[in-house]
Amino acid sequence: MKEQWMVYTKKADFEGIAKQFGISPVTARILRNRDVEGEEAIRLFLDGELKDCPEPYRMKDMEKAADILLDKLLQEKPIRIIGDYDVDGVCATYILYKGLKRLSAKVDYDIPHRIKDGYGINQELIKKAWEEDIDTILTCDNGISAREQIAYARSLEMTVIVTDHHDVPFLETAEGRIEQLPPADAIINPKQRACGYPFKGLCGAAVAYKLIRYLFDRTGVHGEELSPFIEAAALATVGDVMSLQGENRILVKEGLKRMANSRIVGLRQLIAVSGVDPHALSAYHLGFVIGPCLNAGGRLDTAKKALELFLSEDEAEAGRLALELKELNDIRKEMTLHGVEQAEEFLQSEGMMDLPVYVIYLPDCHESLAGIIAGRIREKYNHPVFILTDGEHMVKGSGRSIEGYHMYEALVECQDLLENFGGHPMAAGLSLRRENVEMFRNRLNGRAKLTEADFIPKRWIDVPLPFSHVSEALVEELARLEPFGNGNPKPAFAQKDLRIRRLDTLGKTGNVVKMTLVDASGRAMEAVMFNGGDELKAQLQERYGGKIECASLNVIYALGINEFNGVRSLQLTIQHWELK
Image (tube, rainbow, N blue to C red; front, side):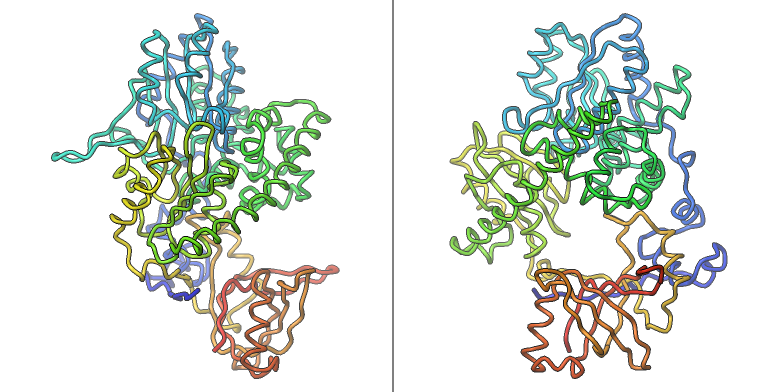
């Protein structure tokens, strides 16, 4: 695919910033590229701690929700938490359940089944709670879009508290957008227009954590008991692909520190069966190793299995559950590969490759995999993608977007065709009737204001960095910018006109290559490329007959340290490349 390499050109006094904070101008430039500006913002990014996070009471309805819950505790009224089936929903349910149990609440939980119940609270779950004499429903990671469902619960004289982080539904009018809030007794969601909480990007589990922290503050529970909840909020933040800036960055940093000696037995066991060193955990492991195992329960079985893992206090039981979830995730990986192949075949056979928005209908695809497959197709073709599949009662789907296409707002414009929907600018979920699929596809594409330029992926370069500026000290300094992820990608450097001195193939498939690259001054650096090695070798063969010394290579790379047999050496990880 054609790519556009872009160098950030944001301006600042990099030398002054470097001197003030004891960092290099390279690191100062990267901070500016992440839009971290001003003395306080830079300090928080480099050295922020939990005490720097805004107080929970600043969230709208936080005090009201706490008053209601504390009153229910005193009256020994039964409370039911209704969560969600992904890693964020599981972690949020865990936090609320364990936190309320610590306060001696009469509390239980229910998590919707992805296929039988669908996303979020529904009338059947409410009816079931009412029939079981539940007094109060407390949602987490859902509820903000459930106006009718919550109205039904209120008609049964149940108390409802919503904790959520998703975008608030709205109605477009001549006077502007009007929020469509559910009629709950209290709504904690920083994205409400009337909420004064300064950081809007929390995940559902982080919102739940703020509520429990406030309740602990009100009841005198020692703050040290929040430690496992910080771990869970950190895992959910990465797993739900939230931006790793602001408060999220602090939560993840603090959570990773605690996970090295986690107080959550199930998390310790899951880290162990995944083969990850707990003392070398990174956001990458949370997002691509640990999180997917927790999600696999909700995708192919029940999310309650992941929650049971987190609630287990028995090492043997937790080990068994962790292994089951890992095995489910391995099955999920195979199913995903098959689904991606089917999606590509659909696009090509239906002649839809040139449409701005890909709406791919795969009736036999497991509906729990729709979002993952949509993400893979989006990554490959850089188009907004919806994967639709047959659910139990109707067609269900998940979408993944690109820059410049607000997916949730696009669904709002199609809401008359949809039975249910929700999401963010970059991801969304929906359900609709089979007969509306074609109209849905046509309307999305008819209203999409995307140009060909939007479909060319941009590869952003932080700093063009010659090999002469690369050092172990710089690599160690860059570690202060971790955790890396959405909103704070690993720093990307670039170098042009490199010669290949040596190229070795690694791995079973030959897709991994290790090279020695030499710049114009003659300085050599070791480099590894984990993906695309077969394509590079094919192009070298086509253009130069395999004579690698004749090739000239431009690369975008990340910096790291390779340790082998006790020897440390600088190593580039090539992220993107082009032959000249």
